[in-house]
Amino acid sequence: MSRIVVVTSGKGGVGKTTTSAAFATGLALKGYKTAVIDFDVGLRNLDLIMGCERRVVYDFINVI
Image (cartoon, rainbow, N blue to C red):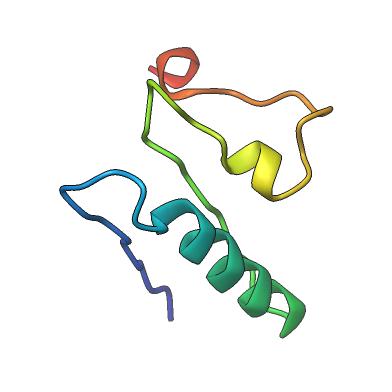
């Protein structure tokens, strides 16, 4: 069964990206398939936190 988890807040700098990265990493290490999407168009840094900064990273504008 698929599940969707959304981490959100109205304030910046409260740890949404860090929490999302840690949660997804933990699930992936347990064998679950995960996808993490950072919708912060202005200051996306999920790729840096997850160590993917040298890979091709698409942002929301590329996808739409």
